[in-house]
Length: 69
Ligand SMILES: [Zn+2]
Image (tube, rainbow, N blue to C red; front, side):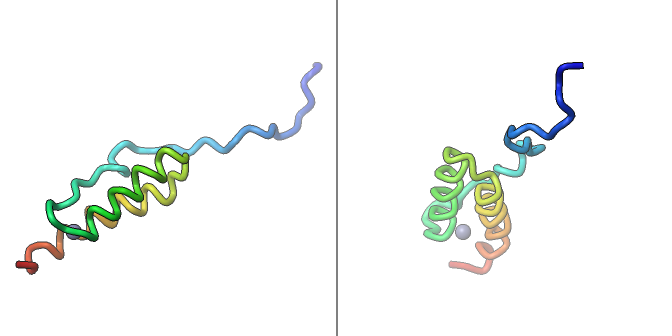
């Protein structure tokens, strides 16, 4: 009984699903390329929320590519 029952200062561990960071930027699409760059930088910085948001933007943007010439 030496361990105090306190919350430690460890960072919160997120349950990160791999697919959350997936998303293939469309070739020639500036918006997708920008999001992919943001995703990589955010992931490197440990900012998973921003990385996931960027990846989701890439996936969602595929819906807009069909209409784009
Ligand atoms: Zn796009």
